[in-house]
Length: 159
Image 1 (cartoon, rainbow, N blue to C red):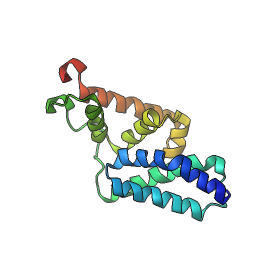
Image 2 (cartoon, one colour):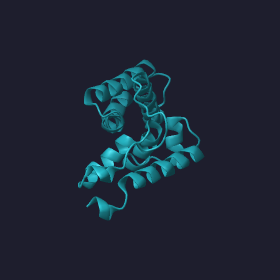
Image 3 (cartoon, one colour):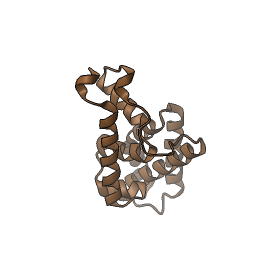
Image 4 (cartoon, rainbow, N blue to C red):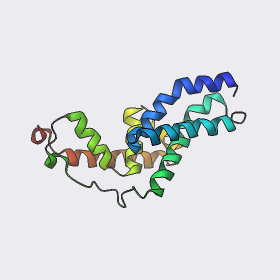
């Protein structure tokens, strides 16, 4: 990758990576640090990485860095079950409900949902980023959606 391609990768992907990390971690400063670290690692490896693979490489690096940070802080929920029913808290804004549900998912489920539904990646690309098989990605997306559906309950009950 040339320095010009590196600059293009920064311009094209930094916002998307930041949004992905921010939605997973919930902390702006930490998310900015993860993105900065990803681009630093990319610069160090700039000669070995082809520009066409920079996007996947950056998201994979960001995902792995995020997982490492969260594990260090012991924020990961030990099991993959939702922690609470969302409609019992009296939320009425759908966007707020969805963000709260995302926050209640385990890290592995939250990552695949964010990559699929927010960033629009294919199952194969998500598998490459997270290190899962395509089948496991599909299973985790399905389970995460079912958990969110359970947390939300019937929409009529929320409103």
